[in-house]
Length: 157
Image 1 (tube, helix red, strand yellow):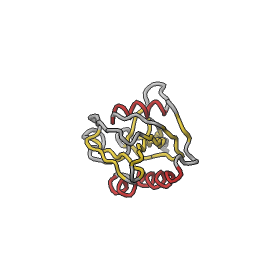
Image 2 (spheres, one colour; image 1 turned 90 degrees about the horizontal axis):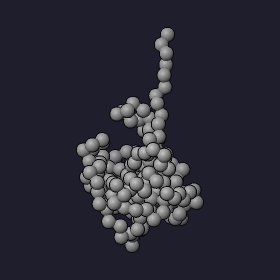
Image 3 (cartoon, one colour; image 1 turned 90 degrees about the vertical axis):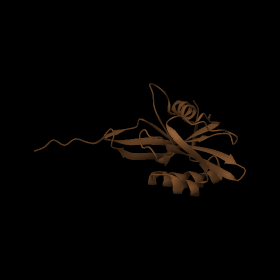
Image 4 (tube, helix red, strand yellow; image 1 turned 180 degrees about the vertical axis):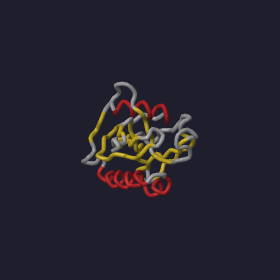
């Protein structure tokens, strides 16, 4: 009889829907990964937790490192982005955070990403590489009609 073990489940960081309100509505920042892990894939910003950082501190640090942006406000949502990560043979579960930046914010990409686009949810849904991000875009864009959404919890670093 073989011993059975479980697939590991970890939560190493965050997934961040970076948004801004333009003259014609809400836009999502969609990033194209560079040739590192998942090179060529489009999605939200991601970030790994370091030491004793809080989720809010991870968002602020990673947002600055990857895009040069600073959040005006941040919200925890009820959504989780979950997937199997073959590089580490574990299931990853990442909280989905909404980070609001100023409309005039200018993106300065780090080497982690090669391109970016500010898109309305319907266009972003056609660009992102994963179905769970399509669902997240639907959920977040629907909730933006009553910004900030009642089910979001504001967080600070």
